[in-house]
Amino acid sequence: MLLQRILSPLQSNHKLFFTMQAKTIKGNSTAEISKALESSLSDGFKPTLAIVFLSIKQDREAICKLLEQKDISIFGATTAGEFIDGEIGEESIVIMLLDIKKEYFQCVHFETGDENILDVARKTGELGLNTFKNPAFIIASGGISTDGEMIIKGIEEAVGPEVTIFGGMAGDDFTMTGTYAFTNGHYNITGIVALILDEDKISIAGLATSGWQPVGTVRTITKSEGNTVYTIDDEPALDVVIKYMGVNKNIDEWKEVIVNVGSEFPMQIQREGTEPVIRAPLFANKNDRSLVCAGSVPQGSKIRFSLAPDFNVIEKVVEECETVKKNELPKADALIMFSCKARHLSLGPMVSDEIDQVKNVWDAPLAGFFSYGEMGKSTKGKHEFHNNTCSLVALSEK
Image 1: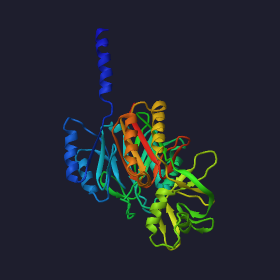
Image 2 (image 1 turned 45 degrees about the vertical axis):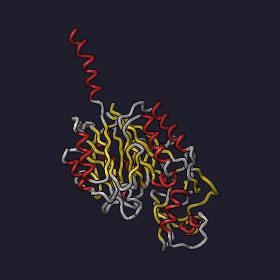
Image 3 (image 1 turned 90 degrees about the horizontal axis):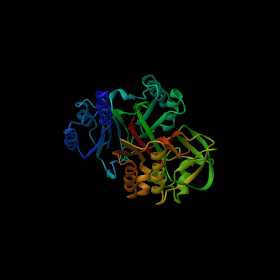
Image 4 (image 1 turned 135 degrees about the horizontal axis):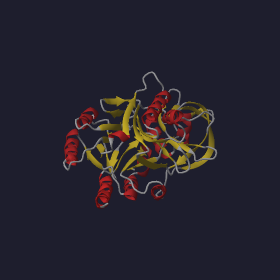
């Protein structure tokens, strides 16, 4: 009995000692990351997983090999800006290191090849279900014209409508030349990299929120296919958005037009019984005057354009995070954020305040990047694909 009384508190402390730990590092070169990595490991910390977000100008393969030498699994994406806490980098590297137990997660990847993204996502979901009874998915997707909506749909078809899905579409410093996900031994993936977590062992909570307000008249998508919009109210889609922005001439600087409409005037698809979902154009086709969005825009959809959020949006995001903390996850070991590049363009320096204040809700290490589309759960909906949204994932070992 005496021995039992002595062991009980020791066993309790032993469990607390092995709570998942997270550390973040950053750098502007492979050499800086190498030095920061060695420093983070100097106290005996032995991470098993690295969340890596970096500019396409950085050497992905060299960064990955640093981690591979330490037997660390990699979940990575190229970015349109990266951050740990509220420190926003440009053309840099940020890494979150986690010592999560290897039996609690698996990193997998699928290239699209001759398959469409729906089939690839379905395979991802099937693999997750074969790996864990209750899998959750954090997704990074490469490929500049990938339809993020189909990623959600494919995983749901395999696992079920209540599956937990968070993630982001990779960026490329807003050059629109090519985006990539990456993992161990595979550094140029235009398909999917998935971090599959055992939700029976890891608590996962989060939210996706935007703050964009609908304005103007309701319009109709009169011709579209997947994530390509050809006409709005029977007019070429590109011409409609140029007109909406008040540009009076037929300009050729269409990339700047798309940057502005994506960050300031995205489309909100109106839906019955739930919140609108935002779709922002990524680029346009000058020949047929179509718009390619990051997610599907069904033909016949009713849309309204939007105005960017005001200063109150940060308060709203923080309040929603506090609600998640109170109702779903009181303690977080690590935070991952996928924030739309359009938010960065619209909010400017305020986006640093948003990141900092969200981190402070849980007071946990945070890493994230500015993305071309986000996956997550809105406060009144299920896990979906979004644009112009801040999607936050909070993780805690059970």
